[in-house]
Length: 169
Image (cartoon, rainbow, N blue to C red; front, side, top):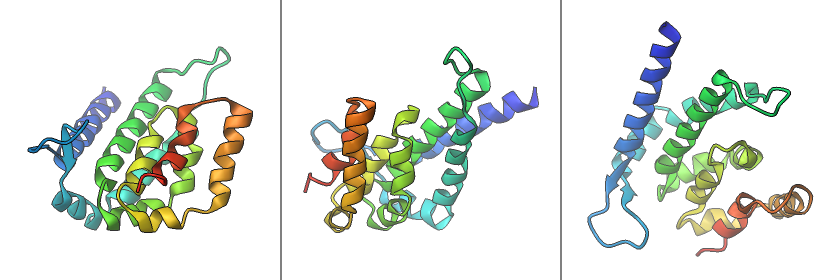
């Protein structure tokens, strides 16, 4: 049907954009197979990629578990699209100061979705990668909120994404 075809095409386009944003690492880099392609990052910024991804990520608000705590097919698909979106944002943001500043403007949104299983912690890491200026302006209240989440919600390593990202200078 048309919806399934559109969904398949959307996922293929997202994967193609992810593949364009990264290139195989040509030199020995610890724990890295790929590096971000700065020209593609800039091109995608100029084309408004960030605003589009925010619209897709907004679909997570419609994802709800049923009475058994399970997600239906539509919800699982939406979560998968959002996960791909965050993967794309990771490569879009990684090491690109202009993109990092743009994505930093929505930092709280990424912190709010740490429990949604869409790898928001990777985007948070990319925002601060090699960007000491952004590390310095993180409000203490956000760190406090993450500490509170650890105390009240449990010991998810994702709650440490912000703290660990701003301590690696």
